[in-house]
Image (cartoon, rainbow, N blue to C red; front, side, top):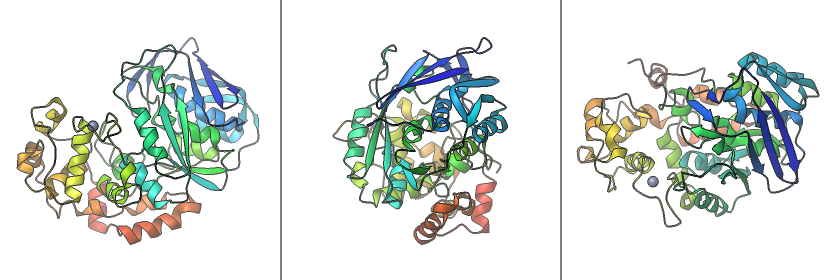
Length: 408
Ligand SMILES: [Zn+2]
């Protein structure tokens, strides 16, 4: 793989060239098979910047990793430290080498989507700047996904009144298959990576909660995953970001989606929370799978019946008519245990299968201690205090539930 960046003011264009042994088929760290559609994309920042070469290399890697085999050649030298992280993490020879490593800055930015998890992070870090990724169209790739309202999500981010930086990019259209999306999940941080010197960033906080970080994420696997290659501090991605002076920080990595939602909806950012990608300025769509899933969690939190017009026969409700395992199963268990009248909802069958109770799901209201231990030093104490005050830490039985997840 060869990659080159061209910067023109705030507009940064990435061009990639496959080696003869590389094809348009690739595999994401989470196992998703993807197909490349074109060889260029851009990132538009609000101002001109000149990032450290390791930041440019990191940013490029979040885009091209799925298709890279054996080696990657950047258009400017990187540090030996970054090259070592490529080698130990992926067995990739990266170079040329010849730049001094970047020393991290002092601030922590929040990668802010506007969903409940990232709002929770923003809420517990009230001074942190927010960086929001906005999908824009690609000049060469038709957009068959016009229902995704990235304009609405960016507008909501701006309405927070926080220090918000909107970063525009068409990089998701590099994926022809299965749909436009981040080539690697980490590509959402591309704006923060390119702005890290300009914003004096020493870390990037993401809203991954206990399910995504420790329970396998649900969509692809369903088991306790301490060595999660995407988000663990000691995994390949964690080490690469750290080598670039921008360690990944998961402030809510020890709590469940129900608890991130509790933080978000109890915060001053409540009006700007939006997990539905399809809704317009008036509100969420109440027709998509995300709306259904999140309404279950919110109803559980509020200990009330679900409010939805989605019926069990709808395609978005179909998977809940099947036996487990489910993606995000811990939250289905929590929802089934706490929503009155669950037998009259699309989750009735799932509730029968799971037989979850308030007692069996109590661990989902507390914080898993190892998640705090892996938060980088400068921010650990502050997060630990918040977790202790808001949720308390899991006891030995709770921890056993986490660490035996998917094996019961
Ligand atoms: Zn929706």
